[in-house]
Length: 360
Image (tube, rainbow, N blue to C red; front, side, top):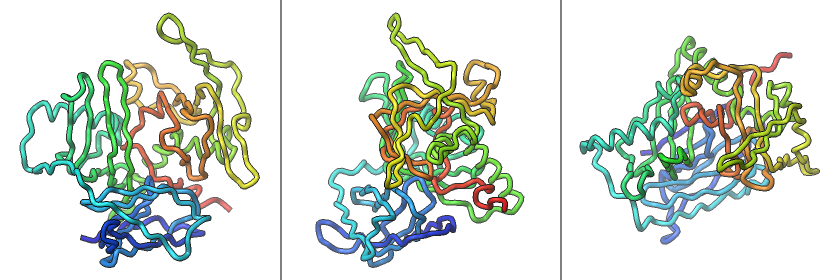
């Protein structure tokens, strides 16, 4: 079945086009899915394997997938688009996840692990509680191969309904790991956001308000502010935090005075924005309090302004105007930004209404 996903209309669009073929037989693969990860831009190839997507200027990660083939991921910069198009070659899968009968009943341990997965994957916010994984039985929940560790794979793309933010999310889960004793959580994947086009005007207003609440103070918002150089104007205050080892644990030392973001940024002659630092960045978002759900999770403490820590796992990192960055695993966050999970994510092409329609 052919699926078509519509991106938001934007100015300064480019055409990303090509053909998807079987690498072994050099034959077209019809109806493969091509999308830009973390955006609303995606399309299904036609019966000849051809595709064409209008996309705004920027840097993206492209995912090409088809059942029975290995997915392909590659970076795309619209400044370097090939006018003749791209030939994307997919390799047939040799070892696939065993098919799971959707109607098959699971044991109580599976359902218990499912709730753990949803808590750490979707989150525990208001948006997470109202979201639903529509095909949850494609999940393979493994708590036996490694003691005290829950590993999760999926035999198909996760179909997630997020009514509060007005999106259907197709999430290609690549990894999930929860270590109970350490409280360590890691997950990775590639989401495509499909806006709900059936919303009434009154519902759309509620959705837009919820989207803006999710955006304000988020990692995406912060990265965009860093790129633009208007961190303070957007409501963020940053300080240096050094984490020092002490008695088998650590001691956090926070500088009293805020630091200027430009002291961490290198703006190159060709327009790139590179951030580099070797400590924890303490980020206070002064324009919004922590949600009551987060305060309750933190042992009922009183809500304060949203506070997070951000650390680079690399020496330096290129940032993008849309709030993305070159290496998806290069940023580690703690605190409020880490608490907000998949159900609070927005596509990188999302913009608050005041930015879509600036006052003249």
